[in-house]
Amino acid sequence: MNWLSRVWLEISDQFVTAFITDNRWKYILKGLGNTLLLTALALCVGIVLGVVVSIVRSTWDKRREEMRPGFGKGLFAFFNGLCKVYLTVIRGTPVVVQILIIFFVIMASSSNKILAGVIAFGINSGAYVAEIIRGGIMSVDEGQTEAGRSLGFNYVQTMWYIVLPQAFKTVLPALANEFITLLKETAVAGYVGLTDLTRGANIIRGITYQSFMPLIATALIYLAMVMFFSWLVGKLERRLRTSGH
Image (cartoon, rainbow, N blue to C red; front, side, top):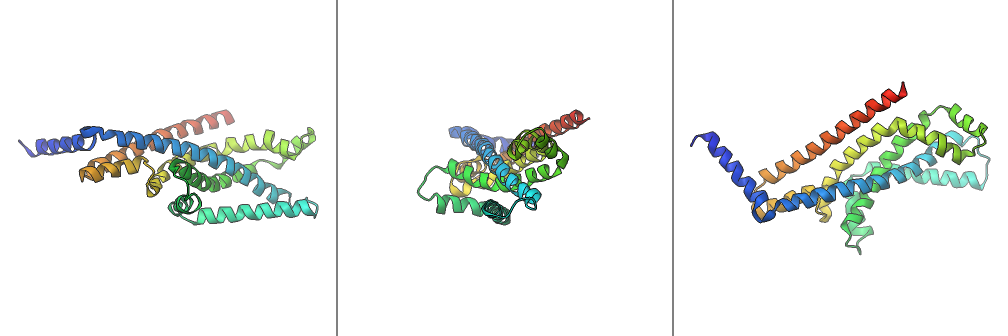
């Protein structure tokens, strides 16, 4: 038996031990499902939170000089300051620390790890989504807002029906890339015992005392997902460029 055959036999044995014996592949499958669910739900939370924060921030930047002094302007200034603190704190601290605080401090009485992960990653993603969308809103020509007001729309209607759709078209590729980033960031969810893809591999590693096969398989799955979603983002960008001409 030559060395190539011995290597192949060793890899085959490790594969069987890691995934086939006792159906250990189910740890990977369960982890993959939790990773995709966690990413999708967290992104939804992040988009909702990001839209609200971006509207507050962009409205203050664009309209503060036009606002009449009084309670309304003071309240808006308070919410704008609150949004700035949120963006500074969330973007200035590691996501792993945030999920530990959410799970072990804020939600210490809850055993719902998926919910804790969705809240933690949603809040984290919301800070980045907010700046992405705010950039899109600020890039929309001011004439679009004036056109909406001339049609009889109030500020909220103008923002909802005219400004935000144009902003979303501009920032959609960036939001798609945020989804890809979030997908990889969820790998730290195992710190709170959530069985994501990475933790599934670690469970197999702990049972079999083999590191190579489960960790390499996990890396390849992440790579395949990122390549697939990157391909979708590329198609989306090309379609948006085509529709813009």
